[in-house]
Image (tube, rainbow, N blue to C red; front, side, top):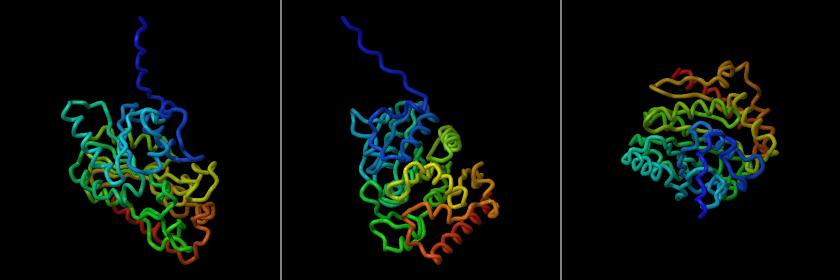
Length: 301
């Protein structure tokens, strides 16, 4: 009589996070982020994923490509479902499994903002990761509140979005939760250390992950990491951690507190087709918003 096949051990190597057959586009930042999450949290993860690119990339159960438990939920429900799972694990005394809500900017800052705010107010024990590709990429590159000023989408004027990008990390700081951080797929070691810190803290943790999309941003897929790095080097994306009313600037962003050390914003803009119609006036407004954001960071340091 044949013996049942033993279950494979839970992998801890980031290379084991994804199985063959994911549906990601070339240069997609989503698998990059998952690998870092997997490495930091040891593979014992329950992902709650709403409607977004990730729900397509991972595929459908039982053949999905993410080597973890995945719960697919409606667009607005990531935070609320993750809250329920976290509460259930706590009632059962399970302490070695991490609940991770993994959602895009639409499912976080727009459609999912109410449930996100509720989970934060209740301080449910979970890690919420907003991977920010700055538009509704899965359904055809429509504008979201996270789309930056001047960027083209299929639902913006030819000149690009007229409004400034919504800063969801600041909104979460206003909820007085235990931990808020920004991260970038260009700096996996920084992202890893923030995940390590988040998993050691009980309560609601929020990480805003910058994740350039080659398809929606109109750049060649081999430049995804370069694009993410340029966002930091130009000062457009600031890497920090917020705890106990104070911001700690992360290593990759520290040199760029000095404006003279930053690369020109034009180096970042010119590589993206979505900014092909940006005007000098809008570019100046973007430059001003960068300085205002750095002033805000300094106030909390």
